[in-house]
Image 1 (cartoon, rainbow, N blue to C red):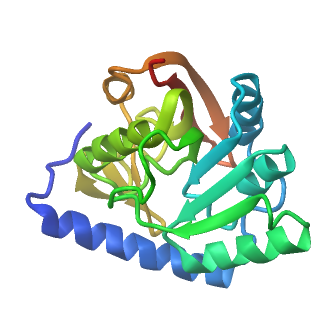
Image 2 (cartoon, helix red, strand yellow):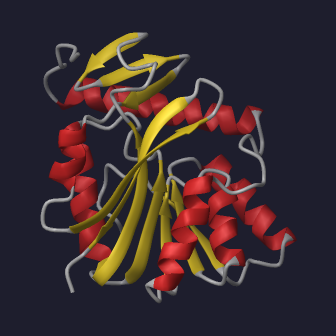
Length: 228
């Protein structure tokens, strides 16, 4: 089920800007809204990254940082990026309180823009439900290309996305390009074809279906590696 897409960059940018404001307001009104316990995908990713010998982890869409803090506690050096300064301020304060400030730094960044990092500069990248935010397919493809650029050869990307089998797919307000807005949050729901396309030129090691939350949300956890 695919709604008729908007044309031109204007509507895409307006939606994404509205979502950034919505997340900023949400983090302000609900400090630490996801709690302190790391997500199950982050616990999995920490094991995968450690087995691969990773030392530096870039998290995209870190929010207030429950997963970034988990990576830091696991011994990684972490760069936590998000487009919400409020979420990152909460993360920075928690890291200081937990004695992790020397292992964790933050970056205010909109993933629609190129990553401000050198080529082949990080060992691993983690993104929990970041790629399925209010991003067009073209913006997602550009972001994955940027992730590949900053990863070292043999580097690992673990990311999760809500897919078209989710109960909210097709519900609420359609913005085209498989993006549906429900309860103020816009989600780009992934068909399997998009997962495979984003992994072209990578080594796709795992696509794991799982559920999370009360709906429950239906997601894929995807693990892929850059060529050595």
